[in-house]
Image 1 (tube, rainbow, N blue to C red):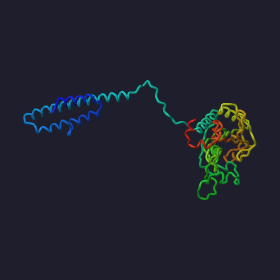
Image 2 (image 1 turned 90 degrees about the vertical axis):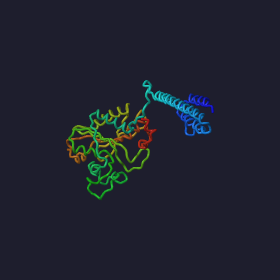
Image 3 (image 1 turned 120 degrees about the vertical axis):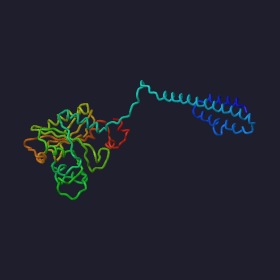
Length: 334
């Protein structure tokens, strides 16, 4: 057996090895239980005793030398591997960071916040009210007759409960933000000016311009000498700042149980078609009476506009359902 050639063969293979897997294979091939050196040991039994002793010593030396060489190479490969890993993980602080995707506000939230900002700059206070309302505040206190069609199940979402004839206990999902008018006037003395943004509910079929749940903003201004002229001035100022352009406005006669006189407001941008925007009017004396105020001493105007409608006009959106679709391709545009 030529141990010298075997040694050279092993040394050459160790020298060429560049990774831990190759070195492990070399170790198994030559130093393993069934490796080449183990086979040489097992063949010593056929040699004379003196020769067997000498060869055995040479093989032991070879085994130790190969083991040391492999261990040294293992340390070197591990060190190089670690240096490479550190180098690859090294952070270059001069490289611009990756842009992080962030959430953003819903278009209806953007419009509502802008609406609040503009009205608060004109001295209006923002207030809220319950979405689950009583028949009294939603209808009776707003001078809505008991036989008015708006009370019918076709429009109003009534809550299931025991039969109750008391209008102050009969519950429904509010159909407008107007009930907050009365709630506020019951607890505050004039003069005051408020807006009430919030969600309202109607038993309506959903289409491109209607939904069973949408957002509305109620406005109320009460003082001793309030007239339609005050309302027109405030609306002109609001719409000009909201749309960032001059807006044509027209008033049409209308009917609402809680205002008298009542009117509808249409707007037009850049000579386009007229669009209905809101209903408004001077607060009806019966509403003041229901809230505990003297209609002979105080007067004011109230208006209600759809926040969804404002958003549709501002962003040229032709389908209200897009706001509630959860479609990220649509929402990411804002």
